[in-house]
Image (cartoon, rainbow, N blue to C red):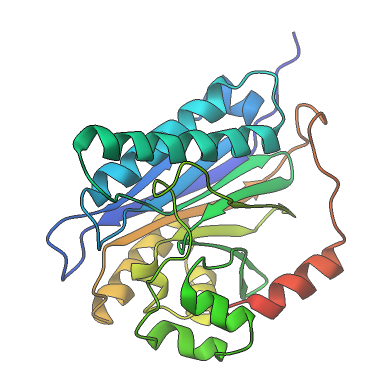
Amino acid sequence: MTAIEAPEIESHGFCRVGKVREDNQDAIRFCLPDDTALAQGYLYGIADGMGGYSHGRVASSVALEKFFDTFYTSNGASVQQKLRLGVQNANLGVYQAAQNLGVHRMGTTLTAVTLTGRTLSLAHVGDSRAYLIRDGAAICLTNDHTRVGEMVRARLLAPEKVRTHGQRSVLSKCLGMNLFVQPDFSQVPVRDGDIILLCTDGVWAVVEDVEFAQLATSSGDPEELSRKIYELAMQRESDDNLSVVALYLRKLVAAPSAQGRAPFRGLKGLFRRLGRRSGAE
């Protein structure tokens, strides 16, 4: 049997309560670097339980557990099918948990990425974010599912006003509030040397996109980058929980199988599209 060549990925993250909140409603999760990950994709996720409702920590933890379990047990499905089924099961899991606890409303964001070969696939609901940092620039790969994000996309609000807007955290879409949810899915070609950053709004609300790029450029590994981001967010007096997942893609390899892979869009068109919304939500 021919051994499967493994990519070189360094990962690190933190999930902390911050200065203001009494409890931590965020959650993060990493794949295990074993044969399962090699064959089915390297999966990383972040979730932010809704602070305005009860049991936010339960919601974020349940969502990631259901999502990861579904992804790694859906044998024979394509990556995109795994992500779609994972989100739906995560949504249902949070909804059922709320019913079992007798909680009227319980929800969470969910942003996850999986690496298969040189393709980064994303699943996203809510206002946590995923960034691609390359050549000294940070490009936001996700849209914020918030009222303010909708205003930006409708050109009713300038992108630079998002971080200080009073309704920045009012979600228009999340997991657990309804039986069905419509997440965003996308695929991005990646290359050696790229850095992927997942973060909750407690982090990106006080750290600018350009600062993510600057911190990544000056950091030698994901642990150092995570520490610098945390320290800056604390200095900026973030009023929310603080969570980050940082991935350094040191060396990528060809995917074990081409089945289920969606065709790439051209890089030029991709980054033109992403550049228009970088920092916009």
